[in-house]
Image (cartoon, rainbow, N blue to C red; front, side, top):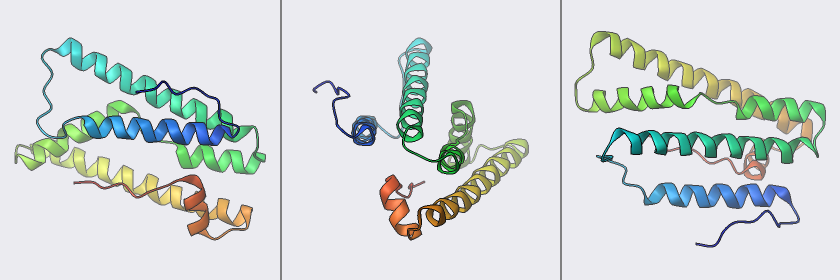
Length: 155
């Protein structure tokens, strides 16, 4: 695999290309029954995942903020705001337990709270996307395409 260098004329293109490559790497990982030989390897994988997430977020922010109005910048910050990796790790752990029918009543309440938080965040994002589309005077579908937003598939 060739190293990706930030040589594109358009910095947005560099971030998109990096994101595509990271997604393709993710697809190479086994999705079910992922087992690590030891906890050290698991911790390293988690650290790398978090580093990549932070680097991508910083790159996207730097690229976006140099060419945008203050209003656009603020809306994009809000659209891109996500949950920390600890939240997602716990949520996926609870999903696994639910699939295996091993949830306690407390865990059931916790996964419902997590799902509610995700839904609320997504609703807020949609509102910010609508405002950004209006600000740019483009249809929402065009904005979604411009930003490279694709629906996530959750199983």
